Image (cartoon, rainbow over all chains, first blue to last red; front, side, top):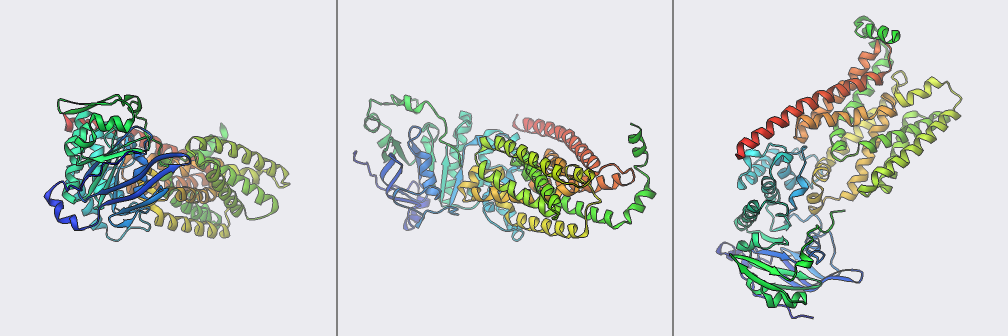
Length: 288
Length: 294
């Protein structure tokens, strides 16, 4: 068993310092998730501070998406505890916003951006929703404006670019004013220029609202400028720390159990040696 | 051909149509059609978004089987159709939860149900004309008791749909985020199948089992061609379904042609028109957004 690098909490900016009294946005204690004999991760202790941006990295099948499902309350932990903003994780948690991959909207012509954002606000509620329609419209409009999407809010989603769709996804996730933003590969299949813009937007909006971000990705470079800490999962083992603490040859070699070389090339991190596992970016299963 | 020309020449015989409108059985048929148009119009956009057209077809076939069984034992045909449709919804829900399996499950269940229905009709000593109507519909068969039953069933479906609408829409258009937000997809799918099954069973009486899709699918498919707003699509779909159902009956009165011929023709006409309008709309929108990003 490897010794885990535990880093002190480091609030990323002054705006959130005043919120340091409140409980961590995400707290995992002694968390283990296994399917039969296969252990995805174990002994996971993690505190994510309000406003913190945590990138979740690792090869396919390392349990990144499963971690999000544990936080969403749709997959129970095998062992240990998980709290969101001080209360145990549960299904339908209104304190969580969720941003999926872009491809989920690819050819949807039966919905507009404003509808998508509206569903993010009250799509999970039963009843007719006839009361409070004006307030609803205002909140949807505010969310659309905060991501600069008002211009195409009435256009069928399938006709928008991937970047525009993900902007709407950010608004959809933030409209309910969540404490935690869970992002599952939201940059996948986006052009590189959009990748930077979307990750920057997510980070800015999260800072503005004080929400923490757990950002699952197989590619750290687009989010490197905004990341506070990294959770790197490999084959049941993990490391938590700042990008410098985790993304170095020594730590990753230890984590992968093989020679891994990390180099900085022109402001980008290049990881060599872990390619075999990283090549196949097939997303781990859908929602069933 | 002569028969068709003769019928068409009487199609706009307003005097005869007006006279027929005075009969209670015609009024009952119109009431039944209005209830059916409302329910199917509301459900159709969701049916299309959820890719359930084939499931509607399969459910209608089993509703036919149920109706045929009811006819044989002298039970209410509407209740028989309802029973068959509910059974179908449950079967399809149980066997076809996986997306890639749904299609073949429906095909298998549908053909067996249709076969059983044919057997049941063959066992029936009644005149054949009566049996044929289960497949293609008839209006003279709608009794006032049927209208009450149809009305109550339609009301129940509408109220449940209204209460479930937001999660249902969320789960239909954006299942991944809906699941993350705690919408119970596994519960909503069979519940929606039951709603669709009930509506389909109502349709068997008016347009017949084979043609239920003209009201349960086509109006929704037409509506989502011309608007991306779920609310507008639902309103348009109801208007289209009512136009087809009521218009079909009115036009069929004087010539005495089966109702379903007109219902399906109107429904299909609206669909073609909406495809054409929708094509122009998409062209305009894509040009617009290309100009905006340029």
